[in-house]
Image: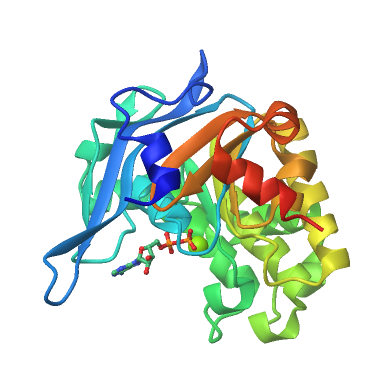
Amino acid sequence: VNPVLRATGHRETPPAGATVDDPVLSVRDLTVSFPQPGAGRVTVVQGVSLDVGRGEIVGLVGESGSGKSVTAMSLLGLVPDPGRVRATSIRLDDRDLAGLTFDELRKVRGGEVGVVFQEPIASLNPAYTVGDQVAEVLREHEGLSRAKARERVVNLFDQVHIPDPAARLGDYPHQFSGGMAQRVMIAMALACGPRLLVADEPTTALDVTVQGQVLDLLLELRERTGMSILVITHDLGVVADVADRVAVMYAGQLVECGPTEEVFRRPSHPYTEGLLTSLP
Ligand code: ADP
Ligand code: MG
């Protein structure tokens, strides 16, 4: 057994620091496996329990392949077939998402939960204007007319500081820089006023200066709307910049969780300690 995992063991209860009093999102004992040719199934996420508090920014950090994206996608019903997701519960406020059908989860995504991925331009459809794509979310979830949706999109682009928003509605994804395209993705995620934003490596594909601007935008949006954010990243710098609390994943397990400053100052798990001392 890997010595780091031996130090962790299997958890029956959430690790210290993983829970809060008033969670928007509350995940208990999430386990995800995939079939592996000749090896039965391989478990890539094991017993993850984590809360995201109201208005809180939680950073889920860990090296590449540690299971961060699978964790996030499992919450939203996006784990690709034939992945198998098990959880004691996945609660968004009072609703248990673990029991919902694919279509019901689709309504949750884009409605109560916004999602942002790593590659903004690849996440958009190249064949449609960005204005139409964001408007489509509003038409689907809120049944807005074309004119009303357009008006809202201009307002959303303004909120994410896309310059000259009305003029950009008719542009196609390839006409945007990476940073501006990520702002479009964030506008789309915000369209229906979500309580929770799940951002998976939102700055990884961006230039360093642009990374800071996108993180500032997330902080500003939290401040203004009070929404909660789960930000997934392999970059401890991102966590240090925005997260109130940090959850550290290693080999599919949550090995440590707590207020960002505390974890950075006094890591309790050998893996986190190694992660911090490897920083330049
Ligand atoms: P991270 O986001 O932390 O970099 P992931 O959550 O993407 O890591 O992946 C965790 C593990 O799950 C990896 O070993 C990856 O190869 C495996 N995995 C992810 N998606 C699939 C899939 N669709 N089928 C099989 N294995 C997968
Ligand atoms: Mg990932």
